[in-house]
Amino acid sequence: MPALKHADALVYSSHQVVLSDISYTSFTYPGDQEALAALKAIPGAGPLLAWLDANFSEQITHLNNNEQMVRVNANNYGSLFALVERCCAILSCKVPDVYITTNPEMNAYTSGQRRTCIVLHSALVEALTPDELCFVIGHEIGHIKAAHGLYRQLGDMLIRYWDILSSVVPIPGVGLLRIPLLLAYWEWYRRAEFTCDRAGLLCVQDAAPGLSALAQLSGKVAGYEDERNIEETIAQTEAHKEVNKLVLLVSILENSSTTHPFIPLRLKALKEYAHSDAYRQILAGQYDREAKALPATATAAALPDGGPDAAAGAADASAAKPLLAAGADTVDKWKASATGFFKR
Image 1 (spheres, one colour):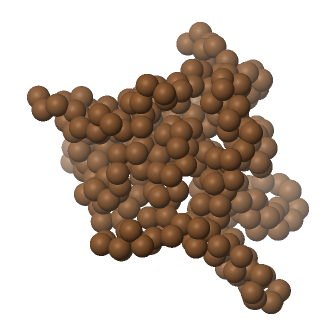
Image 2 (cartoon, rainbow, N blue to C red):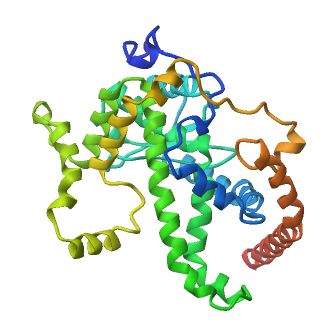
Image 3 (tube, rainbow, N blue to C red):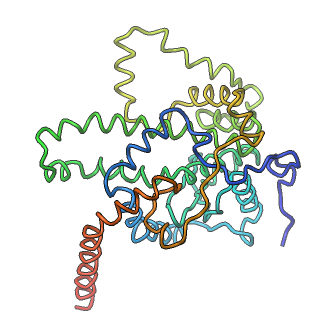
């Protein structure tokens, strides 16, 4: 087996601080945690989504990933896997499944709640330095620790099935809630990205590779990297001061459904966080720690992160049992029908 690459990556430095048992609440961006708490408060939402993830979403994703991508482990792209392992150790996260896929878009994403995975696009891996890549990996680990994927799924379901939902909910005027709910959902989605940029910084513990990685997502020209000026890109956040209020309003409305903040804003926010007391306190060991794991029978129904949400999740799970049972019964009947169809 060839020797592992990237031995000089920042994450392997003897000065790197391992953030044992760190909770995502230590680095959440303002508004992220509150909005996520509101989503968790929807009766039955956490247990229902966890059930859907465990019984369908995670399984179909696992199958698709293994059929269409290359799984990364110690024996296959071992250097990449070692980086993921080290990033997970720093951010106190169980190592997820890791996949790479040939794709010209510079992107990475995560999915799953119990069986989590990180997918890295080939273009991203090839374009970034090991330290920049670790920032991106840390960002994705942030999504896993905060259970963002589970509640993104809730938002996506509300978007896709709103007409059905509004037709069965016996509340006059419920249809009028669609736009405010969507605006709130997209706003949380964007704030979640700021949270995970912080996780990426806490992983590499150096702002330079994080800023460089983000800058390349908005615009990269091969051969001109030495002429890139991140401060000039951050200065673009002041463009709103150069237009009138009507144009600004139209721009806000046009971009209200975007899932990621604009790169200049992310660069500015990351730079500010890198110079904050909150960041320095975390590296000094002053941060929220995750609750100790509950017994398996208790965690099955608990919402992510334990604590008060776990008790609420258990209560919601009891209320959701009839719905889950009906869903399982429907799936069994469909499977029986489908089996009969293919035997004809």
